[in-house]
Image (cartoon, rainbow, N blue to C red):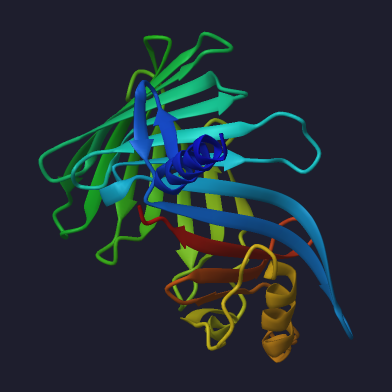
Length: 299
């Protein structure tokens, strides 16, 4: 009897050891090769650091990044939200499903040309029954700058056309929105950047009213307020020590975060195992910190 119990114990232990973490995208089940744990906090910084959990997600990634599943656990919601993505051989997204409690809410699909440029995208909203479609074609101006022509459809009927212009640095500097006849101009939008390449301002000319509106987008802060650097800490965060780790990163970089020149900032600290993103948001300049921890799975 004891021998039988011991045999069953060994069998159960072996099954546990060889169990694989899997996830589903559509009708296909994938084996996960990595899980990325992400935690988003808002924080206050004075003499000490106080963290307030805003969101947490897990992203399951298949070998060769052929598929991924993002699972979101909202702080004040009993529902579970998922985004299932499938990629082609060139790592381009070809299909994406948004789910709530495993029920598909929105389905998106993408197509690319032989240069790996997106030429079409569709969105089916399963809740409203509406279908959205966009097509894209690419051209070059006489001065060598690029232009993308977009056609947008709603439930099979053309809705509007858009011409987007990009300079030789691949920055979008102008957009012309045309009516469904592809002739009448609805508005012309211009984009202005600072020396660091961040969007500083948008100006929109509304053809119907013959008026221009200007929308500030920030981008006035110095370049040193936005940078990425290697995370120079010997410690490795775990799910059990993540709070202490985040606080240590924030306190170590306190001078950066309190720089009076940086009303907005974004600092990315990274290594092979984790990433810490500390930034302000556009909503009341709330400060947030995001921790991403990689869990590599070996079977």
